[in-house]
Image 1 (spheres, rainbow, N blue to C red):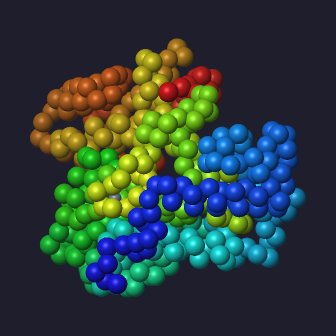
Image 2: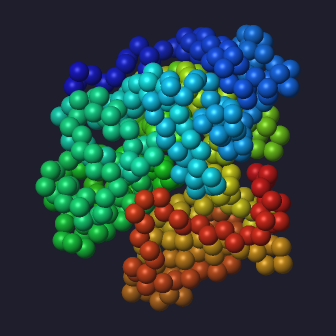
Image 3: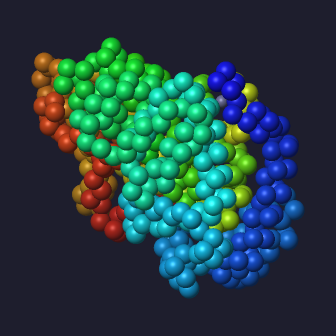
Length: 446
Ligand SMILES: [Zn+2]
């Protein structure tokens, strides 16, 4: 097994035609199950005048209404503990995770025993795709408390790797683990792996020389696919970086890099991906940038049908050099995070790209979005790590942002290195001070 390139070669290399046949069969079953057992879907589809029997092709799914986070919140706890989207009785559910609640009330995500087993089988495949092997020592440094990424460690273990269930522990203890047990693979958030690397250097540990980390898996933030952030992490750690992407509503990881790092292969036998226009909700052809909409194809506890994720990106269905045929997603940012300055759509990930590419400033930054006379502006706070004057650094940052994004920041505060707070997990870098009126005006743009 150790030497095999694929975890499940037949599934991973199915022709597009066969993959879509499999998706259609699963979709028909999933819709029938949802209609028969979920009070919400039955009501919503009856109202919309659609029925699972109407689905003869994958494209027929566009007749069905969308759901979103608000649907989940509104139906949670209604009628039963699991709410109206659930399609099994509570006794069939063995696990629940919750969303982080970063954009409102946390929502429950239930799994049956079979859902959970298929979740871990998918995780094992994505870990294998990222190169995890039985002779690796893997440190799972993700939160275990209610977080859907926690159980991913079971999938890692399924590959045969030696797994260290670290969880969210203080940096000193994590560095102790890295130094004492010399693991070869670690998973954290992009911000945290940078902060951890800095902490290691401060305590006299050079991650490149004194530790054995060969691969770093990151998820939860955009950085893992931003070239400059990838470079910043590689510079400190000297390790290969793999970006993973998960959704509490589906799996801890739904998609992951392969060795070519050109988009994230999504588990298409479980998730049907549509890309839709942000404003009109109309289906866009594969490859075009829009809002990613997911439909689960096999989940029994709570089927997710046409879920608008709020993630902006695209899917590439062309073959990858690695030989895997499952489509690759590219996520550019969150709809909620986007703001508009002088009619230009700005994503915090674009700002991050610029900042991480400038060696004169540290990797830490914050962005404040504010308004003046109903006009949206942004401020950037960075740290000067050179002997150059703050004015020089300010000019450099302004010019770089103007060149990449098209609009200058209204304010750039240049601070001494080490001033900004180092995050432990999901970094809170964007402070949005727009009033509701202006934020709403901007909400449907692109
Ligand atoms: Zn690939």
